[in-house]
Length: 429
Image 1 (tube, rainbow, N blue to C red):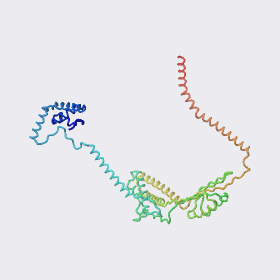
Image 2 (image 1 turned 90 degrees about the vertical axis):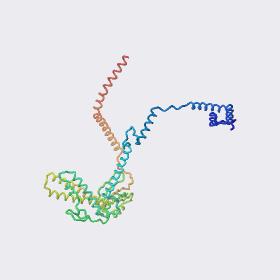
Image 3 (image 1 turned 30 degrees about the vertical axis):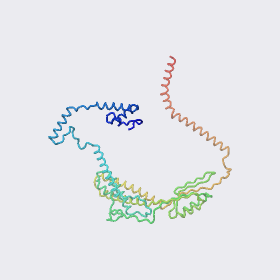
Image 4 (image 1 turned 120 degrees about the horizontal axis):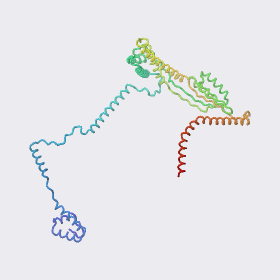
C-alpha cells in the first residue's frame, strides 16, 4: 500500500484507528499522517467519533415493561384465545363515505336505465310523423289516424279540466274517435264519414315576382286589365304612383288560376322589358291532410256532444257545461274550415307580385311654378315653422314650469341658508 502520495481511504483509516492493520501497514499510515494534514484532520475526527461510540451505553428496560411482558406471556400460555384490545370494535359501516358513493352510483345507474326505457317506450307509442314527404299525393290512413288521435287526446284533456261532476269516463267517451270515423275500416260507427278522395297531384302554392319596365305606362295599364279578364284573375292589392316630373310606378298583387299561370306570365312579359323575375312553390299536401283529419275529428266530437246533450237529463250545470264545450268545438271547426279554404285558395290561385315602372325621360316643362310663387311659399313655410317653434316653447314651459319652480324652491332655500351662514363665518374671521 503506497500512502506517500495518495490519501488514505476512510475504511483503511478506521481500521488503523481500531488496531486492525498489520505492523507494516500501521507504520506506513502513521508516516503518511505526519506528512498529510488533511488525512491527519480526518483521523482526528474518526478518533473522536470512535471514542464517543465506545462510551455510549444502552439504559436498562423499565421494570413495569418487563412485568407486563411476563404477565402477557403467562396468559398466552394458559389461554390460546388472542387478547381483545381495549378499543371498541368498529362497525361494518365505518367507512360511510365509500358506502354513500357506491349507493349514489347505483341509484344514478337505475335512474338512467329507467329514463332510457321510458324514452324507448314513448317513441314506440308515439311514432314520428314529421318526416319530409317528397311525393305525397293524398292523406294516407295512417296519417289521418295519427292526426285524429292527437286531436282526440287534446280534446280529452280539455274536457277533463272542465268539471268533475260530469264524469271522466263520459268525457273520454266523447273525445274518443269512433271505429269507423277515421276511414280505417272496422265496424263503421254511427258518426262515421267517408275518407276524402285522394288528390291527383301534389298541392303546391306558387308565387311569382315580376318587375317590368314599360315605355307606355297608360297602354300597359289597360293591357293588364285585359290580361286579368282573359285569364279569369283578379287584383288582390293595387297601388299606382304618378308623381309630377318623375317616372310613374304601378304595384299590384295578382291572383291567377294555377292552370293558367304559364299563359298569364307570357302575356305579362310581353308588356315591356323584364327587369327582375323570381318564382317559388310551396308544397302544402301534408299540411292540408293534417288539417282535414283534425277537422273531421272535431266534427265527429261535435256530433257526439250534441247527442249527449239531447239524451242528458241531469243537472243544469252539466247541460250548460256540454253547451259550452259544443260552442268551443264549433269555434275550432270554423277556424279550421277558414284555414282549409285559405290553403286551398292558395293552391287554386297562384300569386303574382307585379311591379310596372315607366321608362321616363326628363323634359323641360314651362308650366313649373314661378320664382315669385316659390319665394312666397318658402316665406309662408318659414312663418309656420317659427310659430310652431314658439308654440312648442310655450307648451314646454307650461308643462315643466311648475315642476321646475317647485324644485327651485326646495333646493334654493337650503342653498341660500348655507351661503348666508358661510358669509357670516367669513365676516367673523
